[in-house]
Amino acid sequence: MSSGSLSKGNSRKVTISLEDGIHRLKSVGSKVFQLDEGSLRDEDEDTDGDSVVDAVDLNARVPSLDTLSILSRSLLPQGKVSFWKEFEYEREGRPYVRVTPDTPIEEVDRVLEHDWKMAIPTIVLEVISSVGRSVFWDGHRQWSNLQEGLIQAANKTDMWIITHGLNTGIAKMLGDVVQKENQRRQAMTCYRHPKQSGPKLPKLTLMGIVNSDLITYDERLDGKALRIEVDNEGNCKKERKYDLNPNHTHFMLVKDPSSDGSGLKGFILDLAHYLKSNSGTEGLF
Image (cartoon, rainbow, N blue to C red; front, top):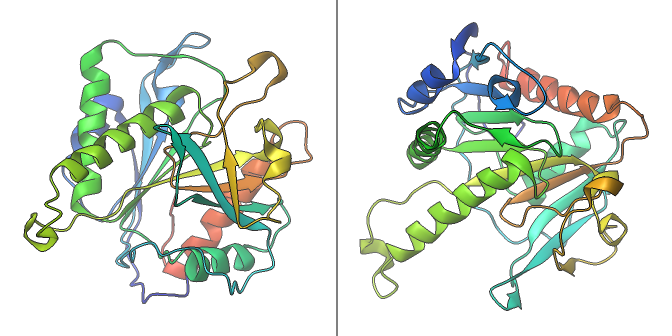
């Protein structure tokens, strides 16, 4: 992105097991990881348990999130979605933007940089997962280790976690992890003396990039209102309609006209290439 000065770094690609990947997450460096749900065991397919990891140097920091700017520099439809939580709607909604596979990535960058106040993080973890499939783990310990590794990484450096953003599967599971960590941080904060509550931790960023046709209340997220209140009433898998996960921090809603999902995949690749070219690295996702 254009907001920060990014130094060039060397890129390497290796193949590791999921357990080894979890262990490496606990030793945080300037790396970008890709975790494919295919490396887990699900009910429909068998895998050899390997995952591809791309490592690259990214030195820019992510500033704290501000309220969505009313004076946006982008013409893309956007707003905030407020979920019903703890007997009321959230006061601060979660920002979203609507795009198509043909949307110029420079426009998306304006939203990220100017409206959402975001810059390239040290770590980007893209979790590639199918929608609607249940994930089976070999044991509770494997999932606990993954949670521990993610939170340790997120607490030591600026990090984005990217999923499909729907309230199902591993995206929901990661949303629960982020919510639990935010609650832990709040419990440790001294409201009378916030500066004495320990070191300041990086904000958790859990971004959903999703096919808008899969969202139950997609027609309401049209960008005409600055803030929309929604109730998650449950997924309808038979109709392939899902709620957004309320613990994701940002959403990109992609209107994909293709029947095979190639438009959404192309948008994610274009975004990755754009970030790569602006960071001066050979690989990002």
